[in-house]
Image (tube, rainbow, N blue to C red; front, top):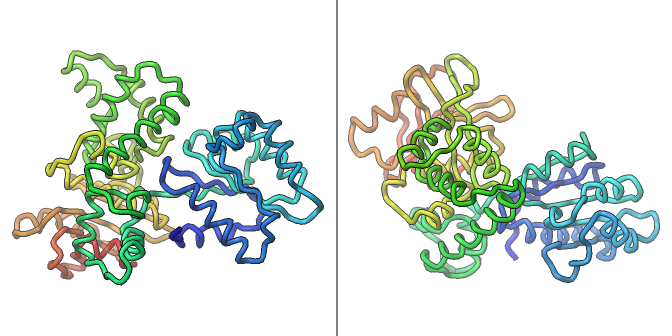
Length: 403
């Protein structure tokens, strides 16, 4: 098992604190493996193995633990004495009323509780009722490019991967950890991702939100996937469906999008007016939880490369803890305005800038912003690295591994 140190470092300060630790993320992003890593980490810290209770609710061995009462009784029977126990519960949403059991464990025992789940709404509304102010969320993403390089080094010992060649591989393969522990042809990988996508759509979207018109939901998904990196409005979607002789209410569009967000299939990126210093209510953008989801549903098309590159950068910024927006500077667009603990960065993403006209077009929105925060133009051109008017132009692959 290859460690994901970024998340162990993130959760470290909360170990032994009186908070429920929630590890959220799309299915198959590595949450179960992370709980096992966390168990090993606790053992390395000197915690006795018999004081660590790890339960995976997707396992048939615990199929009878279907409700909160059964879960509570099961765990209570494993706790002996007043010493602290570490309770790790994987895919907790499979248990009806689980939040009551978690709350009681915190109240009745000296327990440090960690849970994972694949639906953000599940881990917000119920917990807000029972554990208000007593939980912290750690969001797990699919593999970053840095993790991809690390996994590849473990898979191919003795071979130092070429960064730029590896980025092309990462671009086509995506970041689901499964594909980085063995060799997969891209077509095979996309077929497996489609199965993951179908499972997420059914279990964490359709069933969770009682969506009846599945065919219409899938059409909305395809529209979003086909417009990654483009400004978005519910009216645009409704007008598109109208042209296809299908009617859809704008409220239905946004309800479907919220359901997709809650399952981490898509991430909404609000629009920020840099001049006006305000978050705008319309014309946001949507990106996917992993680029391979687009390939699995839509196939790979070169015309999508710009949006895919933006998607990779957006996910990386979120991994680094940034609040991410798309930017508006007057009439010009900035791909990303990202803020974190009082700092900010501006980013433009372009496939290639191999002529002066393209270069100026990409730089001009950043040139207009006159503050002291870092500004980047990221490109697939591995030979183009420069500082132009205070804007650092560099390969995307370098930005993803250099901090």
